[in-house]
Image 1 (cartoon, rainbow, N blue to C red):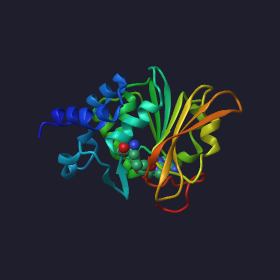
Image 2: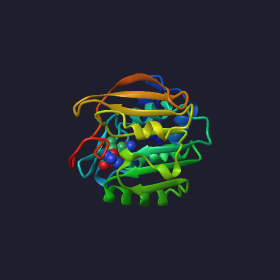
Image 3: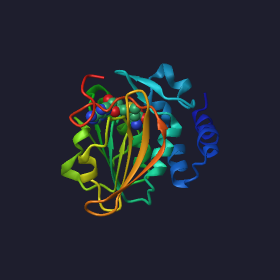
Length: 216
Ligand code: SAM
């Protein structure tokens, strides 16, 4: 299988056709070998229009969702971005091509270790990855120029709002376990935020102090 051809088709058919036209985002998707972020047996399906299992009851997000969430950050380059839910590391790697540094948190250590190996293999050196509960954010490195959450919680954790720089967006799925709304909130000043609904979505649960309880 020619993965570069599959990747180009993915970008044309799944992303551009759905009106995501931010050139930098499209180039980052073309540069990121999605097949390396899934198990070998799933590689032939890596560029399909779907999320895929990555073990531990978790998923690598659908390419369109990764593209849409990345575009929603409105990146110019040079940003410091916080990602909650590293998972396979695919979204992290796409972001790493677009910003100066990505801080990413994953609660399941086996997934974090696997993602770290792929980052090393791809020589992505602008990623800080830690294992822990991302629902409290990453205070040591705040404020961030954007926060992206790739698991769905019952509400927007206030920690995320507090850790945004003024003018920075938070992209977060919020709602019941079986269906969420993807929200874009922007911190307009110290105490105020705009809030916009981007689309319906369905993510794995955000589990932690400010998310759902349980082991997923
Ligand atoms: N962007 C990722 C990708 O494409 O592979 C998506 C991964 S998956 C949809 C969401 C991830 O969020 C899972 O790996 C899950 O373990 C993680 N997660 C859930 N709750 C979390 C929390 N409180 N802190 C950090 N990670 C969490």
